[in-house]
Image 1 (cartoon, rainbow, N blue to C red):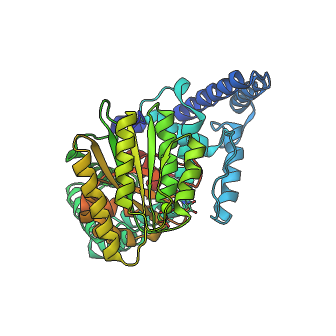
Image 2: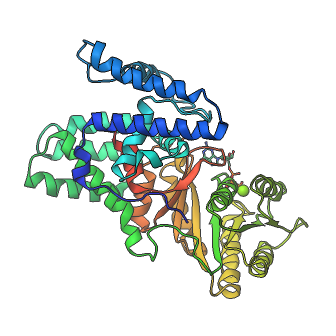
Length: 434
Ligand SMILES: Nc1nc2c(ncn2[C@@H]2O[C@H](COP(=O)(O)OP(=O)(O)OP(=O)(O)O)[C@@H](O)[C@H]2O)c(=O)[nH]1
Ligand SMILES: [Mg+2]
């Protein structure tokens, strides 16, 4: 569905100096400002570009401090960052449409540069997205990094160090299975050679990326794609409040951005307000919604209507919203199984993705939910929401390791643009790269 970069850069690329990234970020910033200026036909952007240039010149000529290689704007933003570190974690980002050339910008630019991107090619949206991801996982990252650097810097992995690493990983919601696997891999490596803590963390990043990427070896597409010339059906399931309906809206928006035609089937007929909520997202995204507002409507019948409409209109993508709660769990699972049977029977040639939506703030609960939905919905992947909240993020690794399911999308906020295809590289960097 997307051309969102998912490549893990070569380790060689990681050795590039900070100066390179700062200069890359400046170019990207300049490019974004120019694009903005073209859009607005506003001459004010010229001043900003001049300011960046003059700030860089200032740095090399007038700053006599130890930080003389760091541009003035970076030193300022470091101070801002220190303030941010002390501030409460509550709402780490705002929704302003502009971006500032600050430490977060440079971090985001670095992640894009490492993926082989051209600074003249990046968008404000990409920078904002990475910033939100980095900030969303900020609390976990700071906890993880400080502790890991300390224990990994202590030399060989003796029993005490292993126990400490175990505790750190479990606290980050990485789960028992994945933690065992990570410890074994770390032990194998660190028995071979003794690594400084920075390098041990780089190695840990590789292990985490491998875990997150391994489910993709079993599936046809490493990226989630809306396939051409076939009906694509994405069935979204999950417990109540996980973020299914919001995610449907965001996916409809994303599909639209990528030029795919889309309709939504509102198959949560349990909650009175559910259909209305889907309709609002339909209006926001100009996406037709198939619903049956009658009382006690059979959700499988709505799915059937959705399939007929999607086939008749020849749309690329049918998104199906489902209920998160029924009278009891058994009913919910039976209903999902029925929906799945209708899809498999009536749309044999369709490409079906069955995606479990999980609220990442609920930690290990996500594993129990995956177990519950796996069979009834024939899950093919997972969408993690609320990574902007109090989520520790590790649940992504736990799910990939324990169930072999790929994480397909992640959500970092309530707004329409706050959902993107998952990239293991970006996620692991947000988790372990300050
Ligand atoms: N902060 C944050 N909030 C989110 C995110 N995704 C969804 N939400 C919020 O989570 C709440 C529940 O979202 P819904 O989409 O209604 O959840 P649902 O799974 O459809 O819930 P039911 O219909 O009751 O089963 C809403 O307030 C959303 O705005 C996210 O990525 N970040
Ligand atoms: Mg809902």
